[in-house]
Length: 140
Image 1 (cartoon, rainbow, N blue to C red):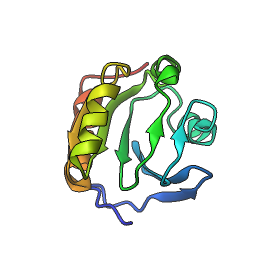
Image 2 (image 1 turned 135 degrees about the vertical axis):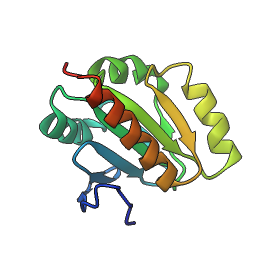
Image 3 (image 1 turned 120 degrees about the vertical axis):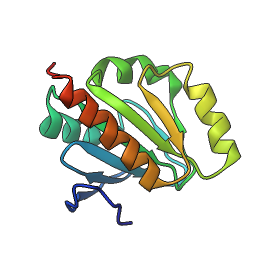
Image 4 (image 1 turned 45 degrees about the vertical axis):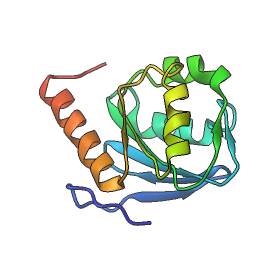
């Protein structure tokens, strides 16, 4: 899938064991495979991509939930601690069931999170959040 960024830069695509990652300059978009149980251990490949490309600077994360998958909520604390420089976490939900699942996840994850129905809206929100963060001099 091609995503439109206002920066008009093509992403680098990673085809990983648990799904696809589209890497942009300041954020990533994930599309996890159908039926995957995302946990801290199998997220390792994505962790390395994040560490190598964002180090300690602010970044955005967009979960494009085109497929149905689960997130191991027992690992939420590990995700919160590991990615404290994720300042914008957008989720693109395509069904009411997914939106209800996200409501449950909200009790476990501490990210600045918004839910959208289109990737364009999610990208715009993440880019705006990052622009504000950089304007405010974010530097962890």
